[in-house]
Length: 124
Image (cartoon, rainbow, N blue to C red; front, side, top):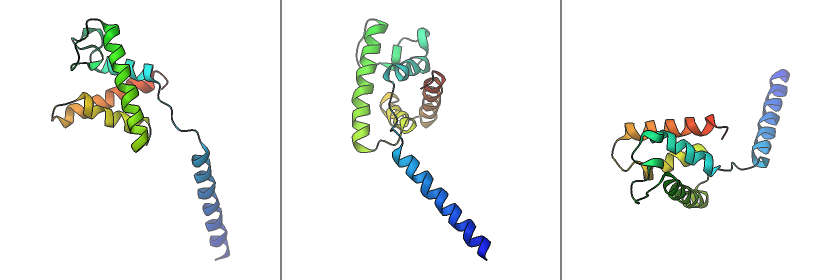
């Protein structure tokens, strides 16, 4: 019985310590350039007709489309941080709703998986 109480105390202290570490850790910061690059590759890279997945605005060059993408990311990130800020992976899920306007949940899930993969592949 005495050993169980000691183990319970140790487990309780570990949980308390971990919660303090999480509370003191820095919040995740989003690297807009890396996320834009991840979106670019997820949308088909150089082979696509819509660089960076930009379909709502007419852009003539890849650089114009990248600029629109970066502006969208900054705006969406500021809104996301005001309301929930649950990390970059959840932001990518939220962002997928504005990039994939269709009703295809399968397509949305693939987009999320691809963007997340390319983002973290760059060391995001």
